[in-house]
Length: 257
Image (cartoon, rainbow, N blue to C red; front, side, top):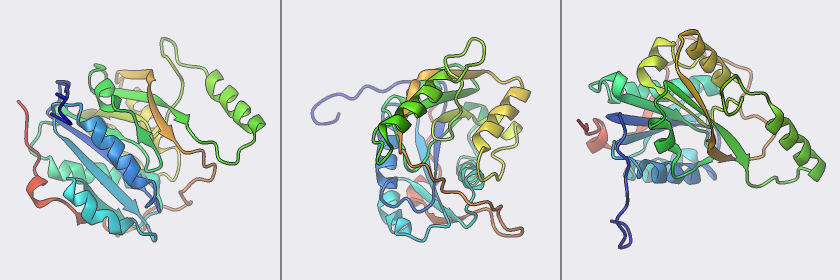
């Protein structure tokens, strides 16, 4: 019960849900993203593990660890400046934490630190009956973009052709989810500084996975045109990640059978 109201939750065909959020110097936006994921998680009967991956952050992101740990969020750190490596590190950590859970009963989702997901974000993914679900993005604040630039972006975005039988043709790392067992069969996210999401979709397609493109699955994201990633790969020999913060009483999430 929340504020005197009974909160409805949705039973889904998974025993565990994991959300990975990569971040590079997003101390201001990351709390809003995590809060939105927590709201989406509250709609599910299954437990949700949220993992924030701080990638080469030199702002105040690390100071958020104590707050996030109190909320049950796991924080890991890498030094790669590589979004593909960051997503991969988050799911690798989740796998180590949830190792006792049958991976065919685990759903993975990922978004970006400068994004905010809708309350039904996880519900729509987990009840879709697919191996992968791809959503769309919307921009709430256009900052200094001109009206002409906004119109041009929207025209191009809306006109992108969709595969036959699909609702849209977009692929966004900020709005995608997939079955854990298929993710690992596909090899996980590659250490790509960009296009890691498109690469993952391609490998799911090669496996013959069921992919649902849901135009109603929308995430609010920023209008920044400059990418956060640099053209680099993780240095050979460095650990995939290190754990900064993990709630000791939530290292092994409870199971629903």
